[in-house]
Image 1 (cartoon, rainbow, N blue to C red):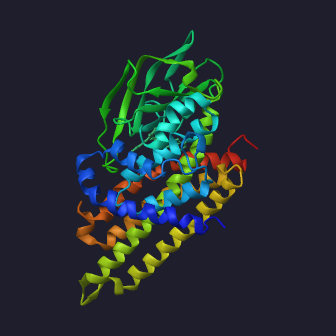
Image 2 (image 1 turned 90 degrees about the vertical axis):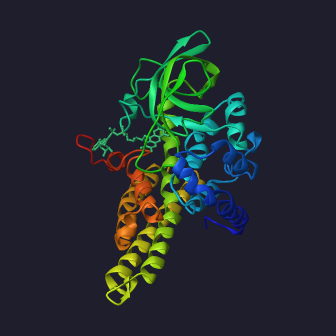
Image 3 (image 1 turned 180 degrees about the horizontal axis):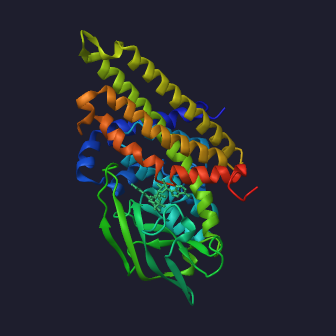
Length: 384
Ligand SMILES: Cc1cc2nc3c(=O)[nH]c(=O)nc-3n(C[C@H](O)[C@H](O)[C@H](O)COP(=O)(O)OP(=O)(O)OC[C@H]3O[C@@H](n4cnc5c(N)ncnc54)[C@H](O)[C@@H]3O)c2cc1C
């Protein structure tokens, strides 16, 4: 069984924290287009939530992945997608490779403060010219004695305007495109790093997203995670946790949307009866709840396999794909039952409609997930 009685206390603490320290501020942060990452992460770090499954030597709790999954699911109770995503970047997207493959010194310098909430992290993979095709990135780290000198640019970087360091994927050699990359921890206050712009988005408003330029940025080679040339492989491993996180974090959020829709349609009357009394509405909501439960079963199965040390590429990819599809279907179906109020920015269902759209794109688009699955199934043309 994935969850035991031991998960209950941290779950309860997190639920209380979200209710007291996050949800009361979400509307204000959504309006501001940013949330105070340092302030919030410090509080989460003090409670141990930024390193549940990270090594104890660096301040983590040393627990297995089921605790990280529990946290991802609970973050779905936050009244927006932006803040949970920013927390997920810190715990499950920018730091897993460093925790697994980084040197002791590098983990002390970057992982320990990220776990404590003293530093905000971001992950730099996508570029203006390469998102789905990760291997085609152009940012390059040139070797110069004991240093790398980095030139290029990253696009759509979550936490990018507030981050203290970036886990940067760049080319460190001229070899084959899957063997010429490295992940490097780059302090964001390094000379030559500039935030080109804070991006204006259709959703995820409380999360800051940046375009970042690197102009001859010098960092010591000891900032490289693991071996030179293995960055693409490390990033593919790191993506498994990112994708599973994305699927887990939407479960409670979708259930919240269903519950709000039940409440609204129960109270709203049309043609002399509550909207909810129309079979087309209550049947549809039951169908959507079933979809959430199906996705949850897949996510839990993938998490169990991860805890058991198995490769979860296929299951995590399927979960991310399904989460993306449901993220488009469920808020859209619910919003419809809110009528005009569903179209108003003041309702959570409209926020969910905007925010959930990202799941089909970020961390690898649906079509990229399908490509991975087809490769594993041996159904890509010429790949039998
Ligand atoms: C709000 C937000 C936050 C993000 N945060 C981060 C972050 O923190 N760090 C980071 O590195 N990146 C981040 N991203 C980037 C995200 O991961 C990319 O946008 C995503 O991987 C898609 O890349 P792209 O936008 O370049 O799309 P493209 O590669 O240009 O693809 C466009 C579309 O083409 C289709 N497509 C692509 N390939 C294929 C194919 N082989 N077959 C069929 N169709 C295909 C898909 O529908 C895809 O959506 C973020 C993006 C957003 C919007």
